[in-house]
Image (cartoon, rainbow, N blue to C red; front, side, top):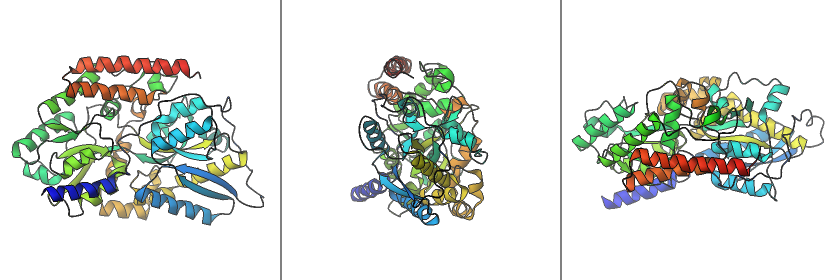
Length: 468
């Protein structure tokens, strides 16, 4: 049995390691780059009549099936027209790519188009190094009517859409249907509220269906998503979308209830704490090995999770996928993933070429191919009617869960999530608070107050250091 578990762990590590974690970490150095004082206007009409194609460099962080699918799309784009040639260059993890980009701003070679993770929005705006997608959307009357509204809202700050969205993900509940059956729970009706998660966990533990009901990690993500689901802003200034955020708002009744729930679940052995979960798979391993029956993870890992858990190495696992459970409220889970940023230092014709490629990736046909090949959520509503998506959903309905979850959520500033320059520091403050709460016995209200103080200091430091 031990050998089987070790073999399974190696298999899981191989397939999961490249999958994004619930949310990506960011560079803690939010210094202003030496870019132009403002963002460039929309360059247009520069590609027609040229003697040869314009070559652009595209930095990305995709791996495994997502990288294979992206490579196919790049090749398809290059073969379909003669005006633009895209050279895709893998730059490591989201954090690696972001760090390389910020370093290059101080002196180095930049790409023309960069796929950068979702929490970097404020830093990139402040860097003065990117072209706002909204400039060309307005100039060329490009319609966003078919895009999922909440996806567009996520990357819109002060009325401007900054990057073109691309790889979209959201948190979902991964659970073991076998454990649910053994506990007398309906395997096709996973819990959707925190109360239901607690009740299901009690029944799972009491029945011996798993050692714990749920696997949790030391993560900021619970608080962020639960505030979005409850319809409450995470920071001031309309969640940082009307003006720069100056303080966090999570030390309130909702925040205390969320922290108290987390502490009680672990203290009562209804949940197992897997630590900081740097690899992003320790919670999934807990489900695979029977240490837990449920966990929350990114939908971006769905293809790797299902292929691994259904491989036959874990005969007691029948994987199920449901929406992320959370507090009752009018909001929705936050959008995750990364977007395509056009670099302002590139020549105007390269900016136009980058925009042409980014928009092509946003077209319904490409989004259908992208979803079917990678598991990322299609961001165009019409894409889900295409044969590639319909066939996937008919064969594996789990791939539809994250899409439906996004559409079901309300589109407003609270569910769009916070915009912060000191995002990494705020997240670290929350993670340290959970650490003290779970490992040192600090009361939830005390831990949350400490997180608030540390987060506010980090925001003030960023705002003082990086001027608009």
